[in-house]
Length: 196
Length: 214
Image (cartoon, rainbow over all chains, first blue to last red; front, side, top):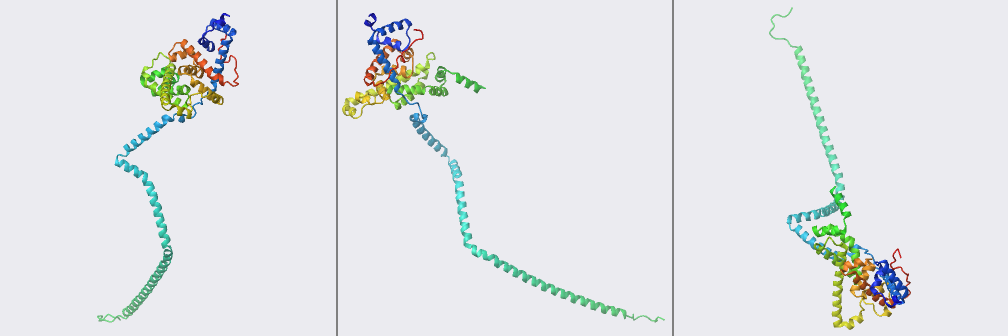
């Protein structure tokens, strides 16, 4: 009866629920609770509410990028500004810029030029190919004719040479035979005494 | 060798030691470690205090910003976590006050149309509406309906499993005041939630502290 008449203060039930009471205090409160429907009812309502608090769940931090979105927006903006500034700084030197542009453009330009050249060469070859195909035949015939002509001339010269040589040899032979005859019939004119 | 020793020390550092490095040497690496360790609990606290995940995220960022700005104020004798919870809660209170002021300005000018056109996200709404709500949303609205000081004790105790003595330290109030705020919070919460009670089963004594020796 004493316990029912003197309800504990509401805040006294808090450590009763969550711990932190001396065993004596706890036992007193328990005794009161067993005898007081009002306090028991109130404590039951508290417990029900506490139990239901679990229903409010928060999703775990899933995508860290998504969670960092507010910071990332500023980071991205800062990165763009810094990047532009850095780029401008780097390109302020004309030579450096020219070198970079050349390094970037040159391979592409070279490739394009090579392709264009190859195309032009191919077109030119196609244009002149029929004449070009005939030309070697003409030249060969001409060369062959020249060769034959030269050969004929050389043969003629050789033949003439041989004839000349034969003529000269004949001349020498005739002269030599004549001189042999003269020599055999030779008598010296100044001899007084004929041999006996 | 020095690196290995450094890594060993880094792994063994407490939050308090890390915060001392931040306070004394502006150690960004240690600050990053503290952020990684604490960002999720702080985000959840701020989300529960404001009822809005986006706002919770923003407040988390502001909390760590404030922590770094006020790094010199940190007293190594105190627990780092207490210091951090306090900063976060103060950020939440500031934000809630700001929202409250904005609501008051709105309600003083064009209250009627605004409130009828779009029910406030943080209010529970009429009973017939709340009855059809999902339990999680219903609880969220009920918690948000509590005044800030009562909501704080509920959130810290139930969603962060903080002991009453620790709550007293964080809020810088006597433990008796924590108990009275908690009692008031539970009474108000029950008043809000009991009418919406459907057939939620109650597990007896599941939440009641039972010491080992009785």
